Image (tube, rainbow over all chains, first blue to last red; front, side, top):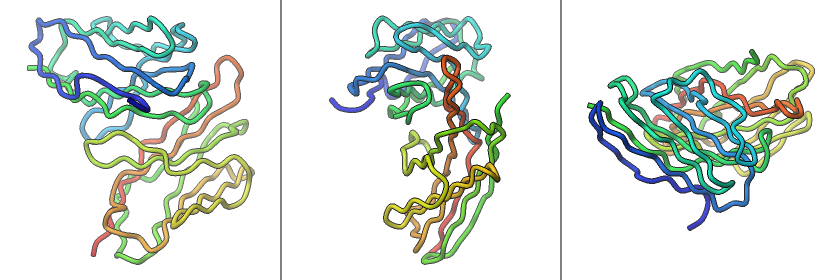
Length: 112
Length: 113
């Protein structure tokens, strides 16, 4: 695998479910990101990790819980989501926080 | 809050024309500038990066940077219907430990045959 991969690509879940999104980067980068993109809306930065340490949380509700066990893997744990959380969730990585970001293909999440 | 401004569009041009996409940014210390293309339902992909004042050309794409005016643009020559997408401008500062990339809201481009 090359670049940035995300699984699953599509996810449908109920409001009481718990699920996790996974991101893996094969680029040797040090920074990883979670973005949310709702229909016809701009990218919303959710979390930033640099060298496995969370450096930014943009007022994201606690029902979203990130985890970064190492510089290559990033998870987003989801629980008790709301229908308005339905969106495309994008993972990205970069060598440093000011370098080019490379995006994964995204997870299309639908909350029923 | 650092801002990256783009006209949301839609910008509509005929096939073969030049499409001009503009972006302004608020932070004078910004050092790196990027253009991404995002097709509907897909993730953004990097088209070009530019770091110095002037023009940078790559095939049909030319990025133009004017730091004094805090302005960066993307020109697409000989536009094709396959260029129809949303184009995102991104600007990075060099604020040491707090530096990061800021994205604009994107400009939607439609190239009609």
